[in-house]
Amino acid sequence: MASGTGDDPILEVDRVTLRFGGVTSLAEVSIRQQRGELLAVIGPNGAGKTSLFNAITGVYRPQDGDIRFRARDQRPVSLIGKKVHEVTKLGIARTFQNIRLFAALTVFENVKIGIESRQRTGPVSAMLRLPRTLREERDGDRLATELLDFVGLRNRANDLAASLPYGAQRRLEIARALGTRPQLLLLDEPAAGTNPVEKAELEDLIRHINTEMGLSILLIEHDMRLVMSLAERVVVLNFGRVIAEGPPAQVQADPAVIEAYLGTRAYRAATGEEASG
Ligand SMILES: Nc1ncnc2c1ncn2[C@@H]1O[C@H](COP(=O)(O)OP(=O)(O)OP(=O)(O)O)[C@@H](O)[C@H]1O
Image (cartoon, rainbow, N blue to C red; front, side, top):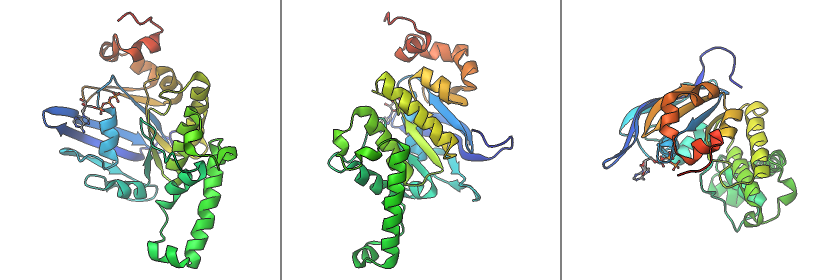
């Protein structure tokens, strides 16, 4: 759901280089995402996809380059040197490749944690239960219920997060991320480990977040069918470099991409070839 025809980037990754000792996980990576766009980042294992998310969200600080985020009606802000919670406050949320939920808390409480990370009340006013605290709490409860409704988990609100089936845990993680009221949502392999039914539900959910909520989405996903069906544009990383970008069909037919993927599980899944080694 790219917004109009004008150039209105929400995220600009500008020649970013990230190294760990001798390993270069991102090499002069440049990516420009338009507001409202559902952009996928693909690439073989170790290509640098999660490193890119970690660089955007303040987990890692790149040695070179800049990353700029522009919230609606705001000036661009550099994310370099920002802490994880500062990046969240600016309007960027993420989910993780390996689900990170509070297993011993309820479904509702998990979403409330996301919401409270953006609320303004400090510990003192929370303790004194000042009017603003009470109002924020009511608003937070309402938003949590709406989000659980949106991801189809309202009837599981009081269950422990750990008791949910795997696909539902993935949807809960997305609800928690949405609780921070992001403008840009980073999804790191949201369908990993899910069965075909759960995958179809996640596909619908991701599409709705993009079209109904109007959020920009940056999606890392190994499932090519999902990428091809959801993404408007695809960026391909290999050994930390961007080797191709464009509409899904064009990227899929790109010889450099085919070569990078040849023999990998993702390629076989995409082409329907049998796993022959
Ligand atoms: N904290 C770290 N310390 C050292 N090397 C790292 C670190 N994080 C990432 N790397 C290296 O950076 C490279 C890119 O890794 P990254 O996890 O970003 O790839 P990926 O594309 O997300 O892979 P996958 O699809 O397997 O998740 C790899 O060589 C990895 O070993």
